[in-house]
Image (tube, rainbow, N blue to C red; front, side):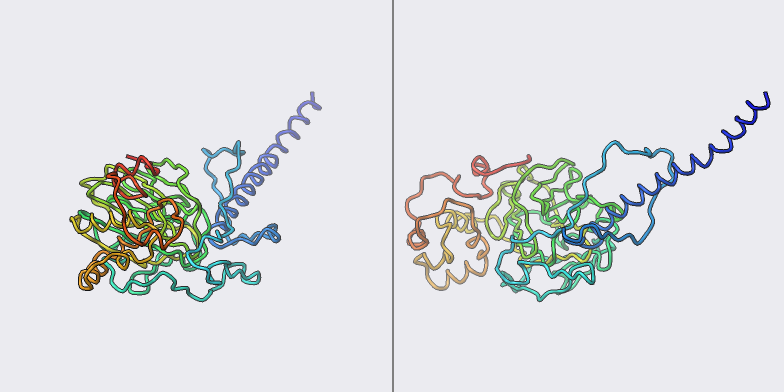
Length: 380
């Protein structure tokens, strides 16, 4: 009898250390994963050759009993390698990120101003409608996210509500593009820009009030995502055309049409928006234009469809100098869009004259609903 009691005492005395070891192991796993997730966005990780050298600056774990001790699957690590080869230009500073192994991150490279020709802007970023982890510069046209380190998702919107008419703007990626997500899109005033400041996520398109194009090429809306385009990276120029007359949202990449992302957006009011989870990332408004939906606009849009590969549409037309200058100042952005029409045998042939019209508006990637049958029309 004494032997049985003695064994029971020994068994009970050994139980707490076992539980303690399991708790420590659980915490260690959570610590390791939180470090991986945090590092992926707070700074660019070491390249593949140095991938084993991880850094953890802060212990993060939870004692909540509701969390499973051993998750069934481990989530995928967000991409820490910046996207390259998708720049609008061929500048050295845009083709390869300036990686510093000593600083474990990306050092500053010379700024590229290719494609930044506009001097007048219909809107800029709103200093009063932004996340706390943002910083504005360049007359409120450039926004920098997470200037030191990242602990979540930061977003900002434009200072003008886009209601009636034709709205077109371009966002240039002025930093390495990496991390959980960096997005360009639109949203209503109901979007809470600071809601996910402590969560790494794709903010734009997480609900029905916003649409967002991710740098991974995924289009987000209502929490769903679909493949929409190729990736974009540092130096890429993402154009957005909101046509409130036809109710369409169209995206462009490096001034070439990607496709129509949404339709039936009539009688709705949106703001241009961007968001990022990546540390020391930045984007810049290089064009923001507005034009009323008039006969003049529709004629210019049609001319661009008929001369899709002509660099100077107005120069190819026998117009009076005064009218040519007027159209250039008011609707130059319409006449410069590449609508994604099939390549012509030679640019000179396509710029000679518009030629006879087939009577259909389905050429190219215009925002006309009929054109949606030819290009990708994602959400209605």
